[in-house]
Image (tube, rainbow, N blue to C red; front, side, top):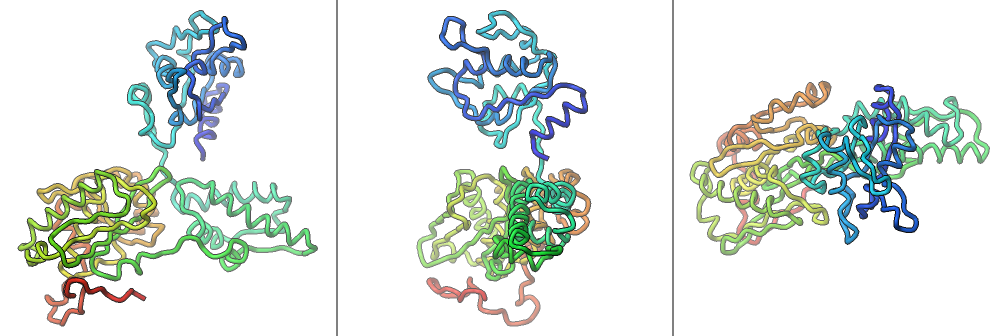
Length: 440
């Protein structure tokens, strides 16, 4: 359900009129407060115009894309919205065109945004913030079967007898061709299949077509997304983390390697200041626990350390990768690989504590999409797991961390030397400057 359709549902439930006003690109204060009548072409502001269109004094008024407002030499529209959204002030809202107080206290205002950071703090303070998390795979499947497929069949001029989708086909589209919190891209891919089938009927094909998982490749081409966890965690020093994005959760990989040098730390992958500080904290924590973990302290003085987070064109920031970087560094220096079915998230402190982070539901759903079966979370985030759909919770294993030591025992594969077998030649045992062959 999009934010706009949610607003329409609220208006139906409350038996009120619905009016929507897009604020994307608005940069003039007069768009909100109106122009004074002394100007040529003067008009009331968008708030009064919306009330007029609704023909009601108490409609559900949706202010769409409030995060896209921008200030200019004409004024700051977000400042004008402060009075509109403040229930203590909007009973006497004054539009410059009307030049008389107008009561907005009965209007049900709903503001929508994709990114909360760009909304000014005084404006956020006047709102009750409700976050809409992304859909799970089962949710997307049901939405596609009930709404998206029938809508696209009608748009393509097809009957339900001419084209049907199996559940396996829709799952393949969801997993291999979309990576999003909502269902917009899913609907586009379904529409592409419908258009391809409609073309066949226009060329004279008779009968019905059932789209299964095998036929998806025929109409949509090679899959755009695939499960790369097993491939990219096949070497020591590579860990799988979880990240939150405005369009849902995603997995990220932390890659660490060392080379002959003077103990420098190199960070790449377009990292923000907070993530750089997390990497420095992780390295300091590894150094402070080197003897406990079984790492020779000379390795830190004789080698430079390079930490890279792939997808370098995408900016990344935040403290939640701290535990992932720590585990990757320990894996690198001990030569113990990280289990490829484990992903983790959590901020770390120099005392070795694992601190809570946000976006747990989105991160867990991303792990599920990527084929992860075990997720390591901070113990303080235990309560956030209730937001995760029950089918997802039941199909995955969750471990809750209080300290970084627990993460090591859960994420790293057993040390072969402790099992009495000869270890394979790992990255940490190679002379400085050597490299391992690529994993096949």
